[in-house]
Image (cartoon, rainbow over all chains, first blue to last red; front, side, top):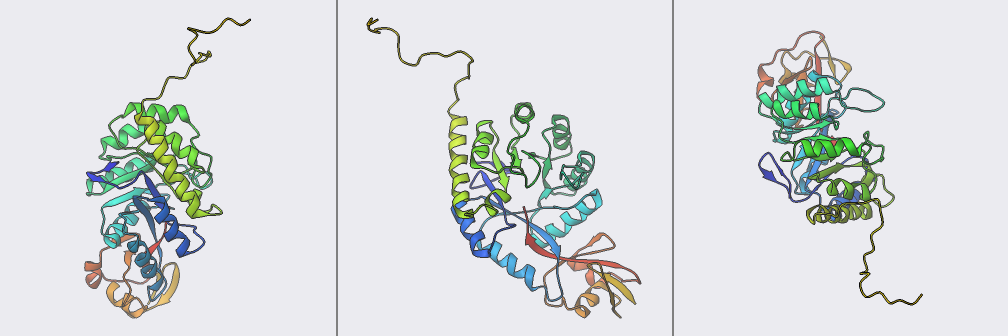
Length: 257
Length: 65
């Protein structure tokens, strides 16, 4: 199973906690998915503080490590401040670092991401950067102290899958020892299986499960796809070829024509 | 004096962040705080002074992807 900053997690699935139709559906989806990490956020709390506490109680009952995010942050300062607030509240130095560069595409801002990662790594955070498949940026993120890369499959919430197979394959090949998570854009279990077949260590998804008609069933589908894809990766798949090649021996073929 | 709490103008006589949290109904709440876009740890709230126009962000866990 994947090891992030020295901690082995129990599954190749990291699952978000947003957009479920009800808390009970969320809980059941997590149970069926076998997810190894739950992602959470921080948002404004009304006087009294009851809503956040109730949500946090439910998440803690899942019994999983939590990965707080900086979702919605468009500047380095926002992301760094949010990370500090998350570290205090959740009691973890893990942070899913999002610095968004464009409101429509939710594409990472590579410049802000790198700067925020540099600041946070220097301050002892274990940064999980939401990045693109850009290998130069990936290298720079590793240089400033990241030990995980989380390239997008496609823009957040689109369900388009792995949009740039060449780029993702290249990134995987460029840093073979670095744990890598496909973060965002997955819509179907087959896409998660593909990520595994490419040698990625885990996937992080939310909408694909939470917005499915039956989130628990979809969670099960992703869990099985991840297992299938990983098995295929470890089994050393055959090389594809353009020309047909008979699988049944020609030797001994009867002459009946 | 007027301060801004999660974007909403509020009146308070509190002179520290800790006092303002109590004044504003967060005495029993477990939250994370920032003032003027800078993180203020829980341990520093009692000594963190507030001034007219300060912007408080008071956050707690929510759903996230």
